[in-house]
Length: 130
Image (cartoon, rainbow, N blue to C red):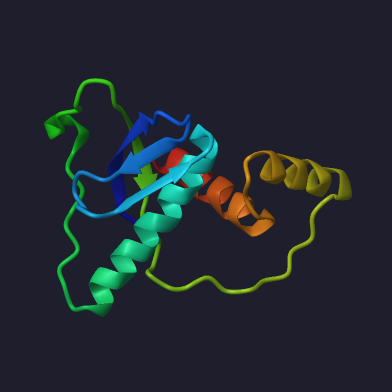
């Protein structure tokens, strides 16, 4: 799994705009930093899948040590797709109280339950691999 740097910028309307220096045209936004990160994960996966479908090369991520961050922007690392596969429906068991917390957090962030859980899982994987 490749991890790409992304630029996060506060927009005039309060949204957080995300762009990828290694992937021109790959842009997204969210109402909060958390939503913007979830949207960035989805946008990155879709962009990479499209490049592959078109038979184009997928650029390697620029190492942070070689990245120039424009003034006023923040940089974050966004995990790319693990295997390039589309999402699949699964059944899981989870504590009822934890599920209520997941749903409440997902709603606050403007995310679906699936999007929230996928984002949390990807974040945990990135953390464990670093």
